[in-house]
Image (tube, rainbow, N blue to C red; front, top):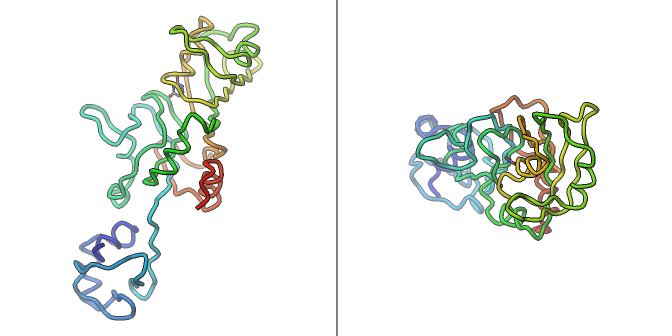
Length: 239
Ligand code: URA
């Protein structure tokens, strides 16, 4: 990997900044001053220092995003804005993709990573990873909804959902729904099967990771080391 690429991907400096620093002798590789940052190094083995500080190389990146309305859960779309556009330039080079999908009008917790294996495992239907959603409906949710969710809602196309938990607010106009699967428009279709309609949907938890309440819509942060290891445990993929 080129030294300037490493520095920009790790968010240390843009290529232009790092070139200026290198010219002034501020970049070393294994203790030797390097002025040509197009030189290739092995970031797993070589120690690069920038202005006297060792650069830590993380192969994988894990991001929590508070998804706003109007963004597609994808890395590109010919017409509409995509969630990766909400990330800064230096992270856009890291080939991050969303772990699972939220509808364009759904907001809340979205995890993005470039760790394909972890994402694949978490999304595997066999893992039964839990997802928690807060919703509002257009009308009060009917009596008996709790039992119907527990016993498995049948969708209009005949699909029988796995057992799920709905906890309603006192006014029954909304509440929380916990799912262990993720079919297309699943919550909207489950609520539609009760002759009702979802008017607001927010994911608040995924695989035990909760949406950070300090993130405004559209804001992101790196997952903590604890959150990443909890995801790995959930995936049964402790490496
Ligand atoms: N269920 C839905 O209907 N939409 C989402 O975005 C997520 C779950």
